Length: 356
Ligand code: CP
Image 1 (tube, rainbow, N blue to C red):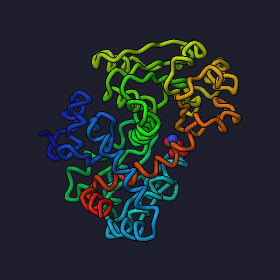
Image 2 (image 1 turned 90 degrees about the vertical axis):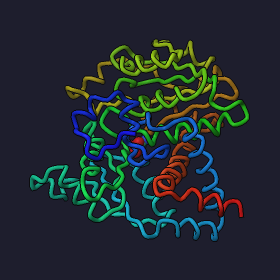
Image 3 (image 1 turned 45 degrees about the vertical axis):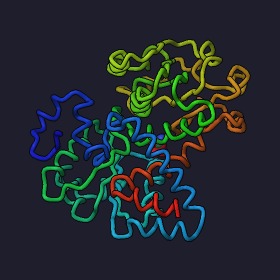
C-alpha cells in the first residue's frame, strides 16, 4: 500500500486517479478526504448507514450527550478562503454534534498570508492547533498539496477538501449519494437509475465528484445537458468510458426529463469567467427547471441541486415533494458527522450505543 509519507510530490502527481486515491486512505477508511475516487461502494453504504444511525441517536438528549462525548478532546480547523454557506455551516455543525472545538480562518486578509507567509507554512501552523483541517480553496489541487506537506511532517493530521477549485467537491458528492440512497430506498437503490446533470458542467466541481461516485453503482446512466461552452469535460467522459458507464451528452433538456430518475441542476459558475461577463453571453434560457417541467417528470423522480441557486429552478418547484434540494442541505450535516466519525474511528462506539 502506498502512503504519502516519504513520497515525492512528482511521484504522487504521476499516479492515475485511483492509485492516488489509495494514498489518501488508511486501508479501507479515509484519512485525508480529497477526491471521490477514495470512496468504494461498501464505504458509501457504511457512511450512509452510519449517518442514519447518528441522526436517530441525535433525536434524544441522552443521544446528543453521547455524540458530544465522542470527540470532545479534538479540535477542527476550518480554513475557508473561498465563499461558502452550506459546507462551512454543515461542517461546523457536524463538529459541534461530535463535541469538537473549532477554530477558523475564513478571510485570508486577516491571516499572516497577507505578510507573505506561504500556504505550506500556514497549514503547518494550523496543524499546531488542530487535529484535522477542513479547507476550501479556489486553487485546484491545493488541498492535495497541503495533505502531502502535512503527511511529511511530524504532525500528519488529516485534511478534508470542502471544495477544491474547479476539480472536485468530494463531501458534496457524499451528501448527494446519501440523498439518492434515501430517495430510492424502496425502489432498488441507486443501481440502474438515470441521472441527468444540467447547467454549468464544465466548471461544476460537485458534478465532477458525483459523476465518479455514480460509477460505483451498477447500470447508472448519466446524461450531461448543457450549452456547448459549459459542457462536461473530456476527462470525466474518458473516466466513464473506462468504467464502461453509459452516458449521453446533449443540450435538449425537455427531451430527457421524462426518462430521469434524478435531475441534478447547477448554477452558472461565472466566478470562473476568464473575462468578466463571458458567461452572460451564453444562452442558458433552456437549462432551467420550471413548474411546467413538473408535469414531464416521473412520480418517483427527484430534483436535486447542490445550491446556491439563481434562476435555474423556479421557486414554485420547491413545494413539489420531488424537490429534495433542501433535504440535501440537512443530509450534508449528517453525512459529514459520519465522515468525521469514520476518520476518528468512532464507528464501533456509535454502533454499540445504537444497538443498546
Ligand atoms: N453546495 C455548496 O458547496 O454550497 P456552499 O458553497 O454554500 O458551501
